[in-house]
Length: 102
Image 1 (cartoon, rainbow, N blue to C red):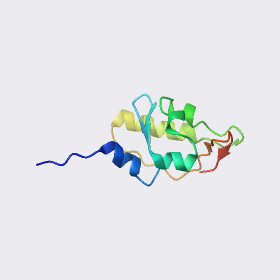
Image 2 (cartoon, helix red, strand yellow; image 1 turned 180 degrees about the vertical axis):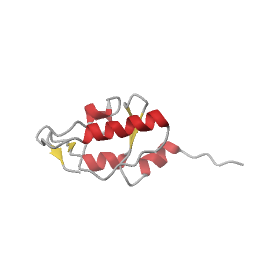
Image 3 (cartoon, rainbow, N blue to C red; image 1 turned 60 degrees about the vertical axis):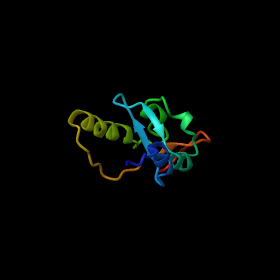
Image 4 (spheres, rainbow, N blue to C red; image 1 turned 90 degrees about the vertical axis):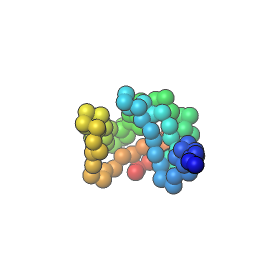
């Protein structure tokens, strides 16, 4: 007798922020922790390309997070293997219209 799990409920209950992307890097799901961390509802980002929803901070001349993350995601898509990136700053858009350092 198998137990049916509600994976959507599990995803939404995770305590850390997550996005789910398709192979075109379009956001297909965002969990509640991501909404709480960014102050932006899932409806604001789901259906958008990840770098349209989370662009580099235009006020930061040293911002290169999208190119570095994009390279990592392309390696994952090309090889099918996980790709480990060093910790980096990635300022994200806020609900108020500015950017918050992450």
